[in-house]
Image (tube, rainbow over all chains, first blue to last red; front, top):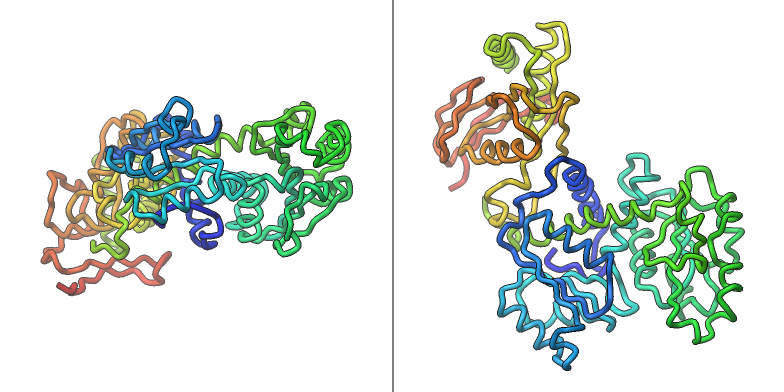
Length: 315
Length: 168
């Protein structure tokens, strides 16, 4: 594995390798000494051309716990806002000796473009590109589901997970559908028809427009953020109607199976897709997701950067 | 092999005046099995269980950059921890000493043991670092190209130590 661009590129074995590695690294994060010398002397650049709190800080924490040097770089306040192209930015980073670039970009395929062209020799990690994919988020979600529900099992066979909300614009949903089904889980998308992408019939999932009938059967619900900036685009009549039909509230929480969990990739719109009492309930693993995010990202960086990239290098 | 384990167990008990102060830490994969065997032997001698765990050293290796990424193995520290204990690192074969150096680093991040001792089943020589084992099952002079293969019933279905000619 040289880059992490999309879940579609990962085999089930590779995905499980990341989760298992994260499991071991999580124990380090729980220990008294959180820092490991593993990536000493490596430089990792966080190239965030779009806003982010969780992902950027999480990657930064992960890199620092492995002793890598981290350079943060956001579009605001850099030459990107002066119109510098992705190519020039990448070549600049290469010239400075970056071993890996973690990229978040509003254009789908930005990470792929960075990896495919020979602009730089380091690894590329996709931290969200447009409405395409967000692989590290899907991996941490799968990790959280496995930890809570798989009872020591390796994959997610037999689990049923609902992904609820704005699937159309969500890269988190795309990556999660691919990964969760790859790991053997059954996925149901719940959303108004206007927020489902064209061609969803060909995805390996079932689709429902009725949250109430789905909620009783699932082991986990993954709520997606309604992107407020799209509210005026008339995907649904108004916010109150959306919360009534597709929001997670106290009544729906009561209907859930006994050990079922509530997930949200963040940032949450409390009161819109999820009520405050659901977000803070005992079922909610939203903060666990953040903690697990660091371990999973440590695993990704370890697997991409710690070893030699020449396959079959001699002993 | 059983006789060597019995002797190592007795030597450990003699040196540490019993099993109360010791914590065995095996280095995965085969060192962990060896540590479990020694712990079982000590329990049968002393009549009480010994503290036994595993210590993964992958993240502290100095040759990470030379090889493809390795899978991480579990680290389990027994209930009493390592603080102020006589920790005995256990591995199957002692060769260059680099694994043990990494283990010392890994151990340092967990706590500060009173002493650290080293038990190995086979010492094959060719040290690259100033490291010496306290308890040795067998000294086996080898040439650097040879390969020592240690097998345990738990993993390989048979208990055996064999010397193979490596390809050069």
